[in-house]
Image (tube, rainbow, N blue to C red; front, top):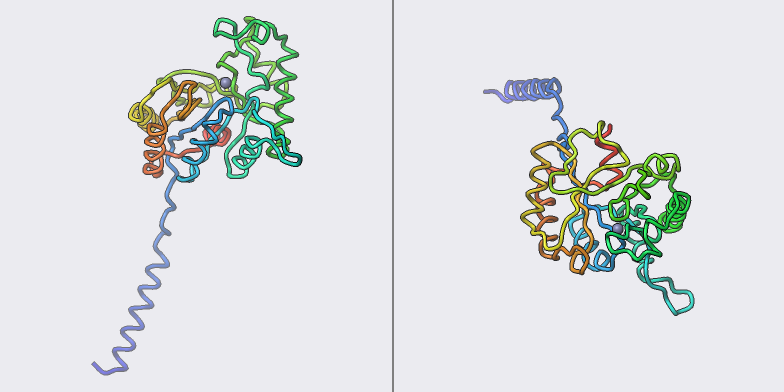
Length: 272
Ligand SMILES: [Zn+2]
């Protein structure tokens, strides 16, 4: 074939191919999986700073921490409490710091001393404590109009009266997290009270396999599954570091099947 003819055929082929590609629908962007997992941790426990946050950060996973008192102080002038500085850093890394009251009042039947129990609180006392915690979190993470809230000991009643309506009126709480078990997967978020989103209160010694089973169930129902952890490598409702790592590895490896979002982001996303 003469050179000129070859050139024309090749050029025509390129033009035709270009035209064909131009008419092809663009590759659809991968759709985010509908199932969502939230990792939430209560009480600002030291094991969360020591074990949980490093494990999460290594896999770029974000979580929600329901903070009440932050312990510790420094006796060195100009130095802050090491845990306060660490929580500030966690917020800067993209973790959500949320409201869990200031002094964590719980019912006497759960072992709380009478003087600091929920039974000694009035509604005004409890609400002003929640507002104070909100201002405290403002000082740590920057100002926010509303924040998520977790009920101390998952108790939504004060002296027998549900206080969620008062909480809504207070205006500083966006979404509320309550307790629950392995069955507490939310499949219809629009018919779930956004101040009473149930979660699985993970009990002492729960295995990595059991936690993964909860994730799988959440994926099967295209739902929202919320873990409620306390200590990881500590004492309170403790889950071992190894079991926790197993869960995180599974979530990381299955990122195409399930998203991991903070509690506030997850509820907002499900409600869209
Ligand atoms: Zn708590």
